[in-house]
Length: 113
Image (cartoon, rainbow, N blue to C red; front, side, top):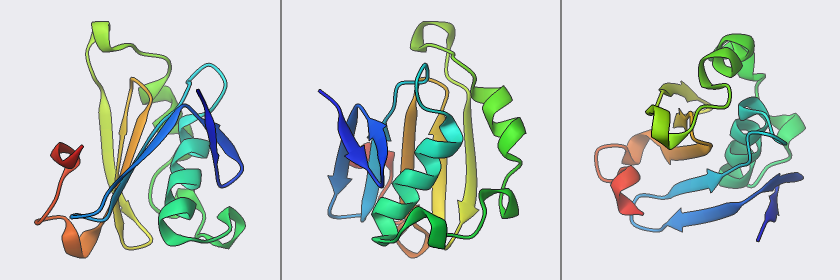
């Protein structure tokens, strides 16, 4: 079952209250990692995606796509972590984006899920 986050279709969205983390699962065949990152950040910030700083101010979007392009859990995980808009963003090659407020980073992690 899919849902929409900031206008982007994702397979699932989860919220970890303790750390304030949002995690989305996206289908790499239909949604780019860049779009999933922007949608997840917009969801976290309760903002329109067009109001965010451009992603290229934090990471090279083409390099991000190249590194993460359609890899599966069976072939191992490639992940990229960077900061953007005051959040720590981790993108996994198997189609997961995790966004955590930087001030909560030491208190919570992806293990909250």
